[in-house]
Image 1 (tube, rainbow, N blue to C red):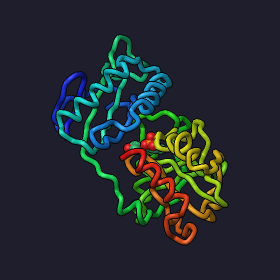
Image 2 (spheres, rainbow, N blue to C red):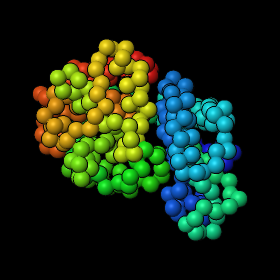
Image 3 (tube, rainbow, N blue to C red):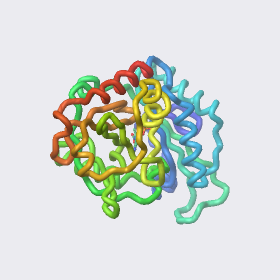
Image 4 (cartoon, protein in one colour):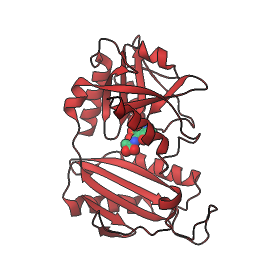
Length: 279
Ligand code: PDD
């Protein structure tokens, strides 16, 4: 593992964050997480597009070009020698005396790290159990912000229930949104369902790759429409997606077995197609 902070390569445990960094005190910033497969950043353009959108939504000045961000990614890959890994980066509004309103004349901080990561192929082969829990997050889940308390509490509740991931639903409408760090899909009568893009979910890059690149090429049917937990529990198949998990089958949801309790056929097709594209 190796880090980067405002222009230089650093050790991960180096003390570099100022007390009044707004990321530190307010969670005032955004992040991205990308995979490195065989020494290359996978789908970096899409991640950078989402990063720029998050920054615009939070009115954080954009002070890095795509070329610079790409260069920093590759300098970390080179300096660490890691060819299969995970790069995390975050941009905070900057450091200023603590006050809620935006400070004037500050420059955002960029910090990044790289760690080795391998795809969890054994787990992908058998699938995971998911916990069902109310979605307690704010109403701008489309922004990949540093504020992840709702996600953290949901994930821990899942772990406490011996589940791998928490699938969240909005209690007012009884509709599933997404996982605590993943997007959620079901398959019913050969139609693939997932929550539509709006303020209630993150537009996952893995989700986009499935919807724009893989599902059309496999001639499968996608429906971007929200559904209830009860509907999902009666689905034929279910899966979650994320940069680190890729396509991960879900074999039970809220204590109910999905389909026959094994990864579904369509899920496995998508999983294979994604792995071929990525590896
Ligand atoms: N999380 N939804 C949420 C709430 C997420 O945190 C993530 C990713 C996703 C999937 O997005 P993508 O396909 O772009 O990874 C959906 C990352 C991996 C994380 O927080 O570590």
